[in-house]
Image 1 (cartoon, rainbow, N blue to C red):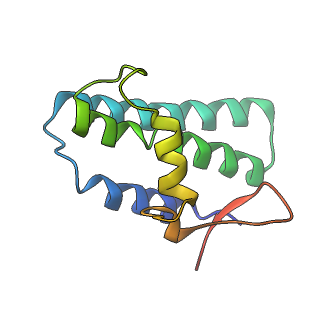
Image 2 (cartoon, helix red, strand yellow):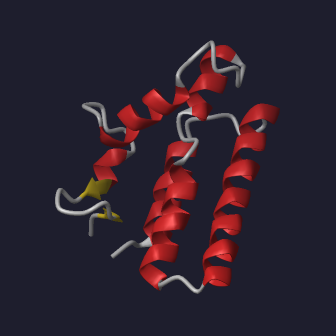
Length: 116
């Protein structure tokens, strides 16, 4: 089961290290929250199960997580300066698990869920 509230709290906690006054950081936050809202609307419109809707919203929430560090390091969204997808994967699932310490991937399914 996915606990979206815990996911949102973990995301907000991650964002605490970034300057929310930075225009590009604010843009990424607004973008991410918009993607989450769009995912929810699409899921509702398709009549998907609550579990599928929660998964879509979790993916939407985390889809650009590597961009924040990219902006901090390079003040740019340009893909040539940093592979934000690889960095995001490392954040969530790699040895550093800055954010991933609260997120678990089951080995027998594609479902992501937050630890209790």
